Length: 503
Image (cartoon, rainbow, N blue to C red; front, side, top):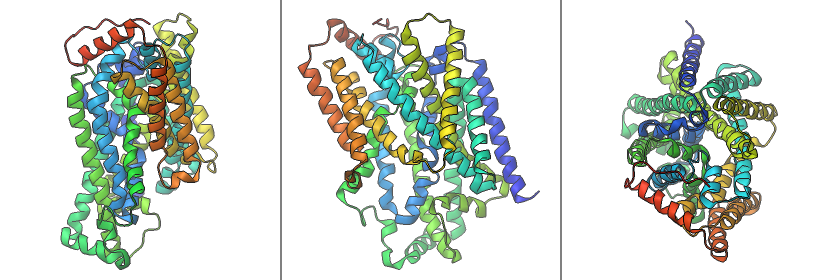
C-alpha cells in the first residue's frame, strides 16, 4: 500500500474507535444527570485524563512545539504556568467543588451551582453565567471545527469543507448520543494517544540524532546569532512577558469544561488520586512537546533544510521517523486533541441551554425529554458553530485566547470565593463576574494586551469587586452558612451521605 493509504487507514480506524466508544456511552446514559455529568461516578484516573485531553487541544501538539522551535525555552512559561494552575485546581478546587455541588441542591452545572450556593431567586447569576458559557463555547467549538478542516486540508489534501464536516460530524455523533460519558470516555482514549505520540516522537528523534551532544550542537548551530536563546528560559523575555505567559494558569479556575470533571468524580477523596494522574500526564506531555520543538531545530538543521510552518514540526518529525501507519496514528493524535476539546465544549454548551436556561421555566419534564433536549442542544450548538466556521476569514481563532481569559476572569474568582468564603453574596458574585468579563474584554481589545495578558487585570479586579460588593451587602442567611459548613465536612470525609439543600 502507498504511504497515503496507510495514513488514511490509521485515521479511519481512529474515527471508528471513537464512534464505538460513543455508542457504549449511549448505552449507559439513562437520564439528564448521566448525560450532563456521568451520574457523578467517574473514577479519578478517567476524570484526570479527560480533563487533560479536553483542556490541551491542538495547542499541545502543534502550537507549543512550534513556539519552542522558533523562540526556544522562553516560550515554555505558558506550559509552566498551566501546569502550576492545574495542580492548584486539582488541590483546592476539585475536592471542595465535588462536595459543594452535591450538597447545594445537587447542582450539575457551574451556573446552577452559583445560583443554589448564593440563593439567587432572581436567576440573574444563572442566566448571566449560562449566556457567557453558551456564547464563548459556541465560538470555541467553531474554532475547533476550523482547526479540523485545516488539518485534513494540509495533511490529506481534502477540501477544507470536507475536513470540517468529517471532524464536526464524527465528534457530533459520539457527543450527541453519548453525552458527558461519550465525551469523557473518548477523552481518555484520546489523552492516552496524545501521551504515546508525545513520548515516541522526541525519543525516536533523539536516538536518531545520536543523543544529547549532537542535539545540543544542532540547536546552537541553527542560528549562531541567537545560539543561547533556544536553551534559555529568560533570553529576550521581559518581566511582564513571563507573568503574562505564566498567568495562563489562572484560567483553570474558571474553565467550565475542565472543572465540570471535578463535579463528576465519585467522591471528594478521589481528587487526590486524580491530581496525581492528571499532573503526571500534563508534565510528561508538556515536556514531550517542548523537547519535540528543540529536537526539531537540531533535526532540520542536520538535514540542511527549512521548515516553512514551525507549527508542523511535530507532524514533520513523525512523517520522516515512522512507518506510514504509525505516522497516521500520530496524525490521529493531533486530531484527538482537536476533537476531545470540541466534544467537551459541546456538552457544557448543551448544559447551559437545557439546565441553566430552559429548565428555569419551571416546566416539568420526564428524564427522557430532558435527555432529548440535551441532544437537541448539542446539535444546535454544533450547527451554529459549523456555520460560523464556514467563513474562514472570520476572527474566530483570535477569540480563543480571549475566551480563556474571559472564562478565567469571569468565573475563576467567583468559583474560589464560593468555595472558600462564606461571606460572598449574590450581588457580589454577579458584580465580580461581570467586572472580570468586561475588564478582560476591554483590556484584550486595547494596546495594553501587548504588555500584559488580559486575564491578570480581569481576574484581580473581578475578585476585588466581588469582595467589596459582598462586604457592602447584607450578610448571607444562616442556612447558607450551614450549607457551607456541610460542604466543608463532606470534603473532609466527615460525612458520607450529605443531604442536598434545596434552594
